[in-house]
Length: 456
Image (tube, rainbow, N blue to C red; front, side):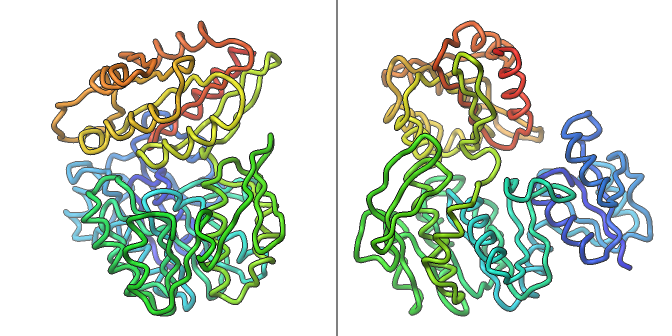
């Protein structure tokens, strides 16, 4: 039995891979600074429940019996676990290295790329394959609501079949490590890298596919690479000439109706962008031999992923609290446009993450809010979420707030989230919708449940 360690094991990518290796029979150890700070304790308990040993992040996890230490890019080389591994000459590998190893060991491997919607599309494809009895291994960056009752953290579907579905991350360039059977490109929009850089990355990603590519025909930037692979399926909700096309999209209180190939279907998710995600998944699964109508029927029972316009609950006065992962211009645009299809004032907390991302796309994110919010809606912006490290702090959430107000938004800056929470509690009234947006901070969900409890 191999013995391996995971440093920063609570992260969505690392926890998924740790569970895969545990499922394969490895002895798995883990540490995380969040656990040491008494955060993410649900994750700690879930990992402990499946037999993963958790240690303080003080170097005690690492001894000469560990064969490999897998470390997240979010941790510094100066932390005790990394220093101890170097002292003992234990190989240190990144999350993407292990993901590439697992991925390449499957004959029918599907990598889902794109700057928005990767987690949902990965979940949809995995769900269709699983319900079609193809026993896929699915490694996701989000929690799968349909698998919430399984042991461990539900960001994986653990099976031993020939199919493997993963998210391919472009933000750190690790997408270059994969040679998929099918390359899926959901879209190409601004997020961490420039559009020109992203086009090169995704163009190579499409070319490398062993069998075929699935590409969004509604995204101007991904349209440019449709011809890069001879076996390409396109999907759309605007262009009937695409390989897979959905129309007649309409919003309903508990989901979205759409028509595919003269048949009406329902998704349990809101937003036309989720219909586009569904067409992407259906197109991909058609390349694996699953009839499109079968896929559409299966998706009618799909319940989505956590933190993607997830309703945490409602009060007796019909105040709804919604949790959302939106953090780039395209995601914010999709979420706010979907929310505006329903009645009720929006009170949106947008928590920016990272100084570099906000330097690159902060104004574009605010422009997405400007596009959809009315002045009755309120945008509340706390200071930029920062997890540590050396970085140039030459931008503030106050800069984004001022830019939004210049554009006509009703935007308010808060030094702390505690101040923001108190303000929300003071201004919330019947039929409002409180939406908490932001990435990389698991405490946002906890904040949502706290608000819900106090509002009740």
